[in-house]
Amino acid sequence: MFKLFLIEDDTSLFGEIKERLSQWSYKVHGVTDFSNVFGEFVEIKPDLVIIDIQLPKYDGFHWCRMIRSHSNVPIIFLSSRDHPTDVVMSMQFGADDYIQKPFHFDVLIAKIQAILRRVYNYSTELTNLKTWCGAAVDYEKNTVTNEMGSIELTKNEIFILKLLIEQKNKIVSRDELMNKLWDDKRFVSDNTLTVNVNRLRKRLEELGLGRNIETKVGQGYMAMEGNTP
Image 1 (cartoon, rainbow, N blue to C red):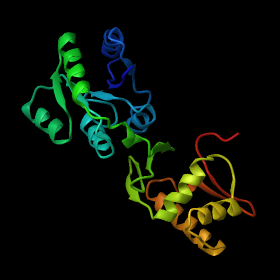
Image 2 (image 1 turned 45 degrees about the vertical axis):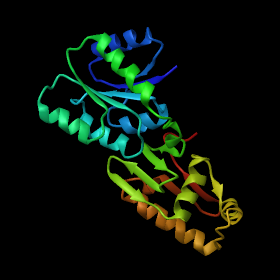
Image 3 (image 1 turned 135 degrees about the vertical axis):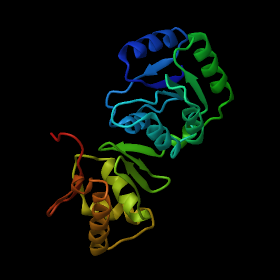
Image 4 (image 1 turned 180 degrees about the vertical axis):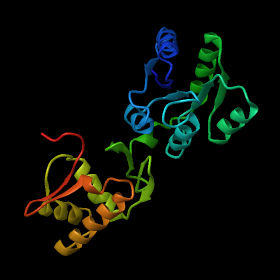
């Protein structure tokens, strides 16, 4: 069953589209937080994205650009705007098609089927993407991205962040971190670990996430997310 991510804030239209697409055995996911569309995209890992232009918080072009910077997932714009510039911009941002509202459902379904038939297997591109505190952490590109921007980390920094995120909201001891860094053939001393964590926290501060890496004196470090137990 293909998973579709429908980014549409009109609840009535969303419900109608979801119902019709479900009849074709498509699993349709909607947006729960329009300020975190990209984070939800990463979590859902859809096979195709359908997106409106006029949305709360940020427009569809913004989300299309963010999605396309990390994935080749097919994207269809579905909008009531009919200006040629909108069509051109959607294609420039990497969309695969543009359908103007109102539309016939048979046309939408035909386009979805045609695109899915010709799309190559891009799904592995998302295996190195994880979400943390609303940000997308790309272990392949060594980047962290959220609404405030994108930063590129060093190999040690992304490795440490990955180890902390894998046990988020739990204390990871300094010994465990150094042992895993050693096993990965990137040995660091006790002092070097401190320096790398401080640099990681400083870089994350550019995205407003610096405080989410906490130091537990005499114990280790913790990647915080949401409410802790």
